[in-house]
Length: 279
Image 1: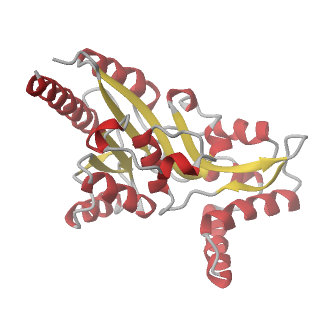
Image 2 (image 1 turned 30 degrees about the vertical axis):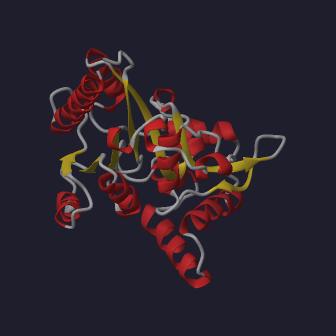
């Protein structure tokens, strides 16, 4: 029987999944004197008028509004704003707890972020160092560390690319050759059936579907006590986009905690059975 540990990955969206709302709304929008509704309304209007990608539009609009209001947009300024973000209950110690559980099952568990939000803002959160890789929209900065224009925009369809990068172990975003290279399923570092995707919204649907169709686990979470939040998540379930829905509560013993531990158990058992069958 093989003694090699089973490899497992949990990939997360951020906005509405690990923290309430959109990350820009916690500090950046107040800094430029805009309400979330006004900012996103302008983003949607501009994207529609110019048939543009909404992620590129919001990133550009952030820079233009900041410039108009004299708000600094250096890398460290974005990072400071990330420190103001309040995470969902249990998120702060979720990673150490769930990693500890996986270890007891001989499962090598790694965490990944796949977000349309700002990499630079996320870097200021207390959980930024808990991820093996962070795939999020980011800016290109000049020699003085000032944001100039979008360097990477991750939208709802391009999110799936990063699941394949996790699957094949290709973390270098500039390496398109390796992520498109044929690799037999049994040689891929993280099989899709050992992958979990946790998200909350429409931008997560392609990831939900890909992971579900490839044998992994797709989980739709919703903000506790948010009007219509559960109904939206239940719709993803009824449309067979996800396996299960849960409130975004990450505390020990919570519904989500139970779901993920059960999936770790499944990955461990499947790995042990596979090893026995090879003997």
